[in-house]
Image (tube, rainbow, N blue to C red):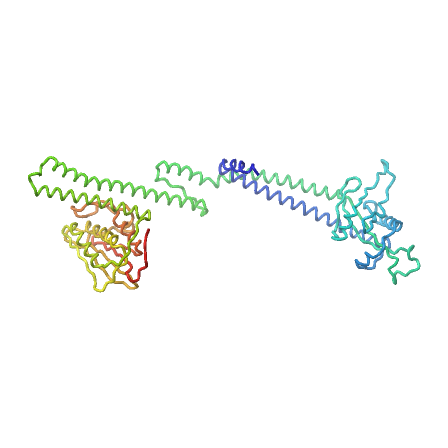
Length: 524
């Protein structure tokens, strides 16, 4: 057993095709050898049983020829009969030998295993060798009387295997009961076991021939299997080899490569399709990430450039004597700092959402103050648009985190203002829905979203068109606002949807649980 780990390590070091070939050939060899053993054993059992049945028929014939009793006695009656005398047994053996011939060994054995008479022996010389004889051990005879098998196998005095059949026989002994009628008394009956035996030479030769044929057949089958297994395994593993090569090139940076998908709908075909889908998603993710890094760099560079220019003007004292100019520069610097701060906060929120560390503090949130606060805070972003809100009376409170819901609405409204031209309007509406839900809508009359970009509106870092029409005074976004809004809304147990028509505007619809029916939802 201590060699098994070494064998496993050796097997693990082999290529996959060799491991599959060894396992397949090992299973095939095991099955063929097991089948060969079964065929050989079945043939031997059948031949021995047929031979034993033939000897049983010979024993019945010998009993009639030797004037044995044809009366059917019970096993108890036979056990009660005395053992046959040696003289009577010898006479019966001689008569039986004349009937059956010299090819069958004949002898008589008592029920306790004692040999009453052995086969007649010829004068031993080179012209007349002694006839083989089988002597069963008394224990074997006793065991036979208990189990009564069809035949026994034993070696004769020459060491050759022979098939032995035992037949209980009952004979009337005239010398012991000459004046008694056998039909009226059982006193004169004597018992013995008639033992017939024949060599199993022909059977052994037939079995040996069969085994030889099976061995050569198994070897030929294994040879054909060896010749076919490796090519077939190489053919089956060819897609995996291609996957290995393509995967190595993809790992080196060639994300545009794809596997050739097999036509078969098997495991390898499904693996190839799943692999291509995974690489496509990775390529898209890397592209979005690359675009995001560029966008963030641009977003940071723009305010930093503005800050640097304003600080340079202040540093050289160009506006020291102009209080209004100084105030204008300071206001612009503050706006740029707020811009960078919002970007950093958005990134932190996404990180916490991904790591599951954003915990919601759920309370009852009144809708009207929430919308009013959002509109007030976003007035600084309004440049010629109208920003209004409507809340019907009797609207139930929301069950949520006021700060996070405030962030959601700010992101959506800010996005709406960016792409709504001067003279347009952005409207926030609230409505009470059945089954304890509150609906919030943010509708604008901006440029809208193209149909092909609408399904990706909530994806991170996604922007339908970085040059999309918007106010010249509005700064570009990083593509995080709607994705943050969606994750925060879903964390509250709500839903968010978006609809848009190019040139007509966009509507974002939020459905959030009302306070009196909402469950205690938290995200740790």
